[in-house]
Figure 1 (cartoon, rainbow over the protein chains, first blue to last red):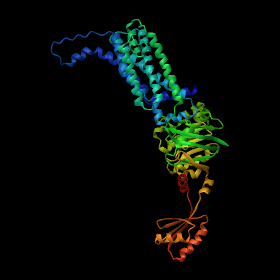
Figure 2 (cartoon, chains in turn orange, cyan):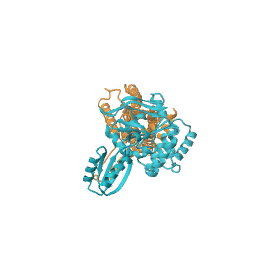
Figure 3 (tube, one colour):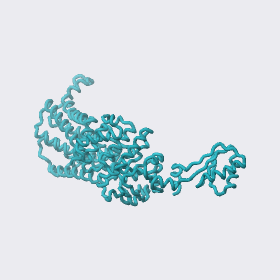
Figure 4 (tube, one colour):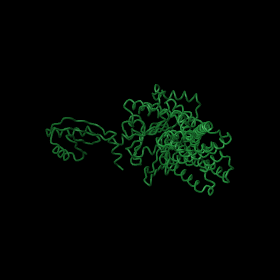
Length: 258
Length: 303
């Protein structure tokens, strides 16, 4: 327990000193607010473009706050996930590669504490970043369109956070196996793209697909009833996260550290 | 007393046997050098002892136990190219390492400060490790390996990257550590091994080819040598000497002739008589024993 705390403290200190705690929330805020801002100013932007023939009438229906927010979630699904993969693709492999992990883990310390501390510290940063981003998006959407009820906001945030934690756990898992960051990023991207594609092509057929969480986090804003597969997706995602973490511990404990 | 015993240690990489079943004992409170050329398998052995990689076969027994957990507590390890968290200061890294092995915050702080003094980094403790020179990193590496006062200290090429002053300091540090720690270190430089170690293990292509105390090895491989430098036609000299003294082993090297003999002074008497009788001109006469370097080459050559 004590080692776990020391490992986690070291991670947080490292994230502070490398400014991860600064840039990640900022990136998530920028990704989020970009949608409400650009949708709000879209008519002005088109008008000021100026190369339209005289007398052109453009009528753009004002999108609803829910649509704007859902569009932001769509941005998180591409740029947000890209940021997460880039930020955490070396969470263990970087230390393995340069040898600093080998030096620390040759000491009488527990490798499972090491893995758990990595996951928790990264998860905390990730959750803070998505919270900042979600909140900023909510604020801008509220001021420019309409405020989304807090309950819907929290539900959507929780579902989306769970989806991101799933991706983080996948990153942890492949970090416990491979040493090449490029390889890890590639595999995780490939899996995310694959399961997202499957869920958009046959959304009802596979009710276990964790990537459905991102569409559910848009759906809860519309106050629509949960689709039938909602709880199985939730269960499967939580179980996968636990499986990823425990198998990371299992694999990493047996692994040679060079 | 034996602190560490390696039994039939083997390591295979993709069917290639890198370490070929070796046995050795490390007695308590001694300084033992693992000597070998590059690629002999020194690093692999140290990594196996440190528990970083697993032996394909065989076992490692530390203080009578084969448990890897107990081994980790008993061992301090410094890899060949120590990698730290460069964004930490030297002091922070030592406090972190000490606390990881169970010390309280206050105790870890005190221990870290005293360790910095011991390895001669007292002034640099508050600098970021990124700014450290190669020698300073090596010394910080030794400090982090002894934070939990291990019984055995494993060091992979600890002095190879150091300059003369740094090397001297580290070797002196070994002398102090030896009082209550077994120091086992690898090196490819004979001179370093000769200077501080009590015992030497020679490694060649994954096998131990020779081992023992420095004195006994020196005795075993010592050969006296009489060298004479001539100002004559060497082919003539060599041929005549060889026929006059067929029972001496001789080698010529440029204008020099080496004669190997148990009793060099007796050989000198005989040879000088011959030289004077033939009126040869000589420049230099020297009696020496073979150096460890030659012994090293000889040992590696045998197998």
